Image (cartoon, rainbow, N blue to C red; front, top):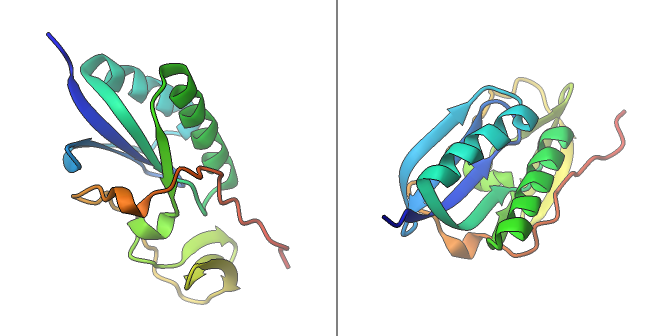
Length: 154
């Protein structure tokens, strides 16, 4: 019996990690984990690939935790190449209502227009990430280079 064709969206910039399973661009399943991306992504994808035929991969390519971005990118890029699955990316602000994203200390990543900068902010309420109910292909690019955005820390 053929497996159901799906698209996957991965948000693995901090804890928790979210993986959205989409059928015809509609969210059908949410997978959430508080484990480290380096440890859990291979295990989660092993299970996902047993159950589904993954036709596209999407991910938030930053900004966020440098190591989380790096691990996620290398994992997804490798999977994309090995399994011949197209890979697409967009910035993380699409998944947190354009709220500041924690960098280090009191520094946060903020998006102003199309630019991402770091700013020192006081009393910022934590803003989590959310999987969209509908996957909009127009918000993603084939340029999957990570947005590390590490500036001078002072």
